[in-house]
Length: 294
Image (cartoon, rainbow, N blue to C red; front, side, top):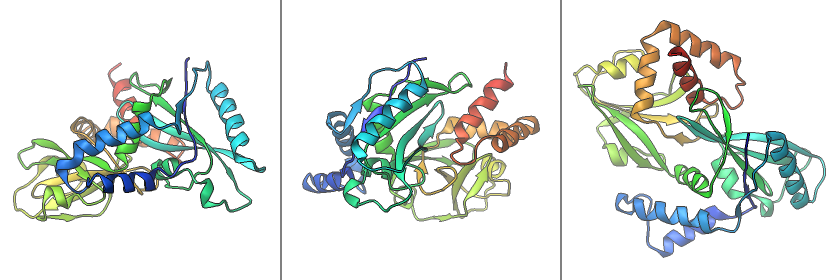
């Protein structure tokens, strides 16, 4: 097994990009600027000296050992404890941060790692340097993988740009991108935000359009009668503090599970068996569907 990590020095990247986008007169609330801003964010990460791709290692233990040495060398403090936190996941892959924290004292903001703090699902403050590593599960089993700066750039972009799915009453679905925490700017104001609905581990926020026309697919997913078009967005697991991406393929896979009691029960069992701290619903769904066709 070959594995590496991306070392992220402590940084003030959030403040930097805010100032730089302001200078370039670019706004995340202007859809015409989306491509330019994503290109800017990608170049920012790829060319930034605070992001360094490590050498390849033969085991996860070797990766962690190397990170522990690096972090303790830069932290210059004692009483450190290691921790791994989920950053982002999708169909086929997930990204985690390994960092260290001092549980006995409050750290100075000057030691804050803004990239890591903004990008983890708990939005917990992370200090000093840290390592990001990648895991893939295209075969239904989690496998350590090689991370690149492009991967890290995509994680950063996902902090600001999110994908949801519009389910029309005729069953057709469309992927729609929105910025920040307000899909209304894209989907329009005829929708009403409903409560978060947990569907086989996915925390979905439905935005429902007022209509008398029955929406069969949305009703199957949400477990109640839904009329009108529905826009589904996805919150990260456990904390619900951040938007993640959800696509049409995942919606179709959720529908497969919802219509099959055996698959539904397997996912429920897998969800209960896994560590609830940073559970990844994409992995459970992919693993369940792949194992069902073997």
